Amino acid sequence: MAKYLISFPSAAMIVPDGEWEAVGRDSHAVIDEAKAAGVYVFGGGIDEDVPPVRVSAAGRVAEGGYPWARPLDGGFTVLELPSREEAVAWAGRIATACRCDQELRVFQFDPQS
Image 1 (tube, rainbow, N blue to C red):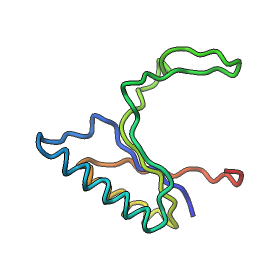
Image 2 (spheres, rainbow, N blue to C red):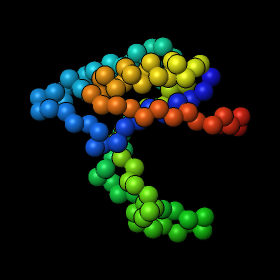
Image 3 (cartoon, rainbow, N blue to C red):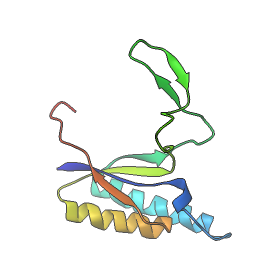
């Protein structure tokens, strides 16, 4: 089984006024289904009100993320699934609930994780 990251940037969520409650309900329902199916690992959204910091190997803390990289924001879900086809199916369910396309990525296997 592989772990899959299903995610979207904040800008992808263009939800008409009055639909946010339904989006929340629908997205939580899909997550509840993933939990019931035993495939849910972790999920959430980046708190965009808390700015990132970079921490060096020496323990120095610098404000902000990498200046050359696009900001990391939005929401994500990690599921553990037996196939890419199942991951695509779950990503489609999350896309429907969130009203936006989802990016799907697979984590490299690491026997120590």
